Image (cartoon, rainbow, N blue to C red; front, side):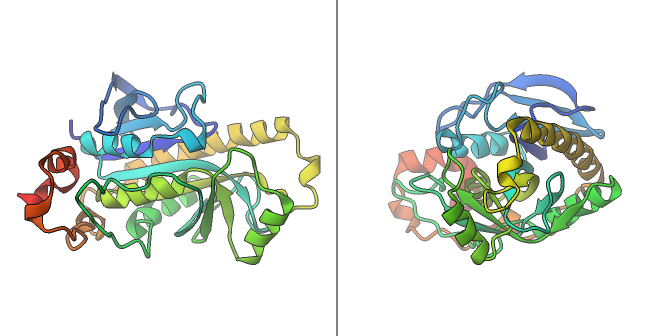
Amino acid sequence: MNIEIGIIGGSGLYAMPGFEVAEEVVVDTPFGKPSDNIVVGKLAGKKVAFLTRHGRGHRISPSELNFRANIYAMKSLGVTRIVSLSAVGSLKEEHKPLEFVIPDQFFDRTRGRVSTFFGEGLVAHVSFADPICPHLAEVVHAAATGAGVTAKKGGTYLCMEGPAFSTKAESNIYRSWGMDVIGMTNLQEAKLAREAEICYVTVAMVTDYDCWHPDHDAVTVTDIIANLTKNAENACKVVAAAVAQMPSERKCKCGSALEHALITDRTKIPENTRRKLDLIVGKYLA
């Protein structure tokens, strides 16, 4: 298959209105199974692959996600751009519930998650100073503006382990560090997408203020679910507009992220590792 655009849906986003489903694809990867079958079809007239991050029915906790399988599966379908949607809490008054943030930085507070395809005899160090594809971020931001959805470009997404939310002490520390939003999933996706030479952008959908906010205790689960639903409606508008506006040619550096990243002597790479990562590095080892 040659499906250039991938969409990863987060909490509250399990389907896409206007998405013309063609088929479900079962993908096996060297890293196990992805979160769910990948649904492929057309959106805004373009081929798209849609994956529910936590599985249909929201069965998989952030700490249990097989990030490598999810990104590898997208790569195997030919995906070169991923728009990732994620429910987040706000760490700044200016990022209000029902608004979106398109972060350009991440800060890692996870523990022990695997966030690389490499190892087992093949070492690579990709550049990750700028973890989001700037061109893709521009497309998504323009799409949000055109769809009438408030989306602020730039900021830092703090990725925590979960599944419990932050303590007030942690939340206030993160605010003192200048973090913008907090979530549990997108950092590993961004790292693996970079290694897979896939353009990646996060649409962080604010559902609530984190527990630092004086009104936090007044927020109910019902409120959060209502915000998730409204955010999902807006996300669908933004994604459809972004897909429609997506240029055919990539002019960023994401597609050559591994060009100078492979460190291992080519003659020392184990054959089983070479085979396992052929989809990722094959063009550099030919």
